[in-house]
Length: 181
Image (cartoon, rainbow, N blue to C red; front, side, top):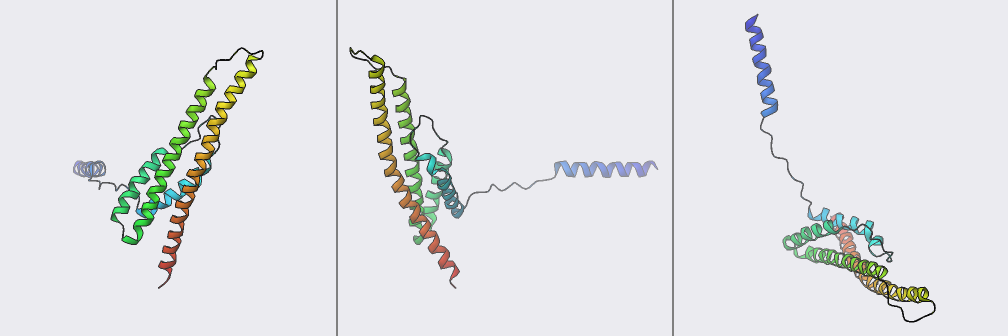
C-alpha cells in the first residue's frame, strides 16, 4: 500500500511540475497588416472627423493622436514594401495621417489661443460703459480666432476628403479586380 501511495504521490508531483513549468511557446504579437492599417485608418476617420473639424467651443474633443502616429508609421513601412501599384494608396494614406495630425495640432493651437483670450483682462479706455467695451474687445478677438479656425479647418477638411476618397476608390478597384477571374 505504501508503494502504491508513493507512486501516486510521485505521479501527482510530476503532473504538477509539468503543468506549472512546461515550456510555453512565446505568444505571437499581432502586428496589424497593411490592409488592417488602412481599415483602421478608415474607421478612425469615420469616427473622429466631425469632432476634429467641429467649431471651437473652448473644450477639446478627444482626438486620436497616438493611434494616428502609429498608423502613419505602419503605412509608411507598408509603402516601402508595397508593389508599385499599391504604393500610391499607401502614400495617400500617409498623407491623410499627416493632414489629420496637422489639423488636430491647429485645432489645439486655436483652442489655446481662445482660452488665452478669454482669460485676459483688456485695457479699457475712458469709457462710460467699461464692461461693454471690454466684452466687445473680447468678442472681437474671439471672433478672429474662431473665424481663422473655420477657414483653416475647411482647407484641412477638403484635403482629408480628397485623400480619403482616393483611398476608398482604390480599395474599390482592388476588390473589383480580385472578383474578376
